[in-house]
Image 1 (cartoon, rainbow, N blue to C red):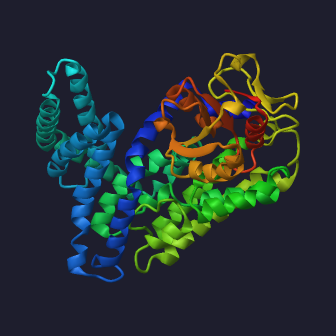
Image 2 (image 1 turned 120 degrees about the vertical axis):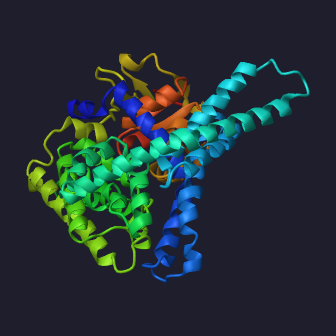
Image 3 (image 1 turned 45 degrees about the vertical axis):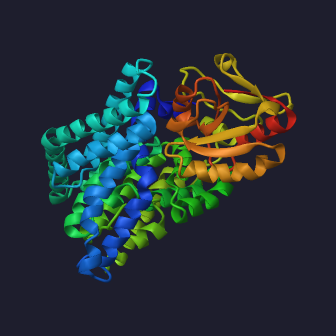
Length: 495
């Protein structure tokens, strides 16, 4: 368990993940709008597939107005529901008008900030409004506060955010000019393994890439985190030279990661063999370096990071260089991964992290929140999932009481959708509905949550009264069988 614990972290990392989840939560629901903008850009700008000045006129308003307002709207909604969404959109217009560049970062600030101000006002006047005046107060408070914050955005926050965006762009230019951009993979690849991939891609590289794409028609920023090559190379290395107990799960993971674009599917393999993060870093650096040498880029963020999404947002004449950067990244990560796995020598030696992932007799689940060894095990063949003393105080539920299972991941749109689809079929005969949700948006009445062990802390802090069952592998994890058995036989679920 030592290797797993080193990566599972503590409350600080859970807070970082939660913050990153909020950033990604403002972007992910609007990915369809980003894709629409990317396709229109790829098709109709002067260097696009079918240049058209009239249709290309959509590009500027969409990236400078529509997308930031959608982000502000979504951010406001996350804080204070529909009222927060409306005031978030109004306030975001202030930073849009107050800056010349696309204000994604400004929208991520103004949307939630405006909603927070309105939420504070609503709490202040709660129970103090005379009957019959509720609509008047609600509408005018939203309008007055929203208008005031929009003005603040125009004269204050907008120019500040523009300066920050310019500084970030200058930093990127410095890295590119000095051939240092591949070094960002040293930060990006380990952070991805800690489930910060969405926050990095949509919260950092997305805004920088959108600004570049508006000027040049493409951006390498969109390719840094989303390149499926490093993950594919790691998975191929695991398939050929990894532990034999794990190999049967790898082909499915390769298909889901490379074709489906759900990169979270390979993170457990990195957590199982942390040294493979070196292979992912090497592959990431090689991919970014190749993209720099070939002047490669795409017009929008490939979301999800599937090879098909890449091909859809690649500019005219750029497919060869884009595919080359993916192939080089995959090749380098495979070679380094194979070397780290010693080409299969000693692959089946006893490994506590491997035992935790695939189970050895009775499955063990690491406690990502505690500082001592804790796990779960099958209780006497009854289908129950019991725990050691360190988890004995956690919530408990009988399998017979379970009517709904929530599958939670960081954004609620990738790995949780895939896993929920699998479990929905398995649990339907027992009358259990299965839903997927972002971990930050778990409903207050949730009673049973299934999430990756690396995200268990966040789930428990979001719904402290719910039973949280962590797992290690998205495919073939023994915990899925244990949960189904407990529901079928009425066993105890605790976590």
